[in-house]
Length: 196
Image 1 (cartoon, one colour):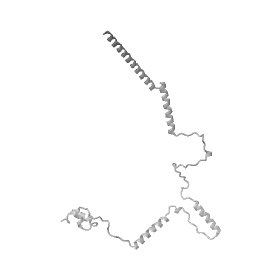
Image 2: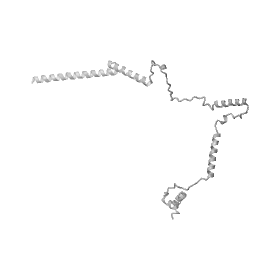
Image 3: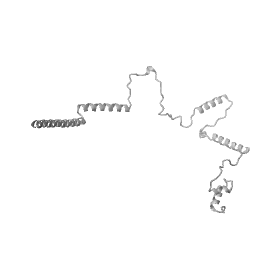
Image 4: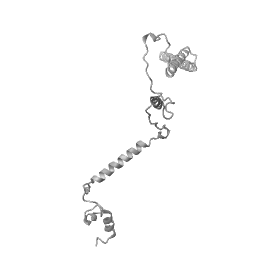
């Protein structure tokens, strides 16, 4: 009855190769055993030899397939004559000095790599002015501007100082008026106490 249901057959077809029997397919696809062991497969000596030959062929093909090989001069077989051997030596020297491509024409330098050159003591200049960086110059200018502003502020020449002085004058005036009122009230109290 279970074997004829579509659910069981689908699971059985999916798990047929990995499960040992149909009984394990009943669990809804959950397998009871891990299949780590598997069947043992041994490679025969002939197969190993064939694989090694394939690898060696691939390596030799890669070595033969150099990108600049088409641009190299074919080698001239050496002859027994001494004059010819001298000329062939000169050609072999020329081949060594020739560069491939344009890499020898381009000078590549890392701009971030700074080479520190040691200077001799007698070549050092002690009276040379120290060059300030942009940030240091800006910091010095900012401090000088602040000092100028404080000096003008103390002299009362800035708008802020004028506003502060005006505010202080108003406060002084209010305090003087308040002091006069208090004196008048105190005098009025004394006069009232004397009348009684």
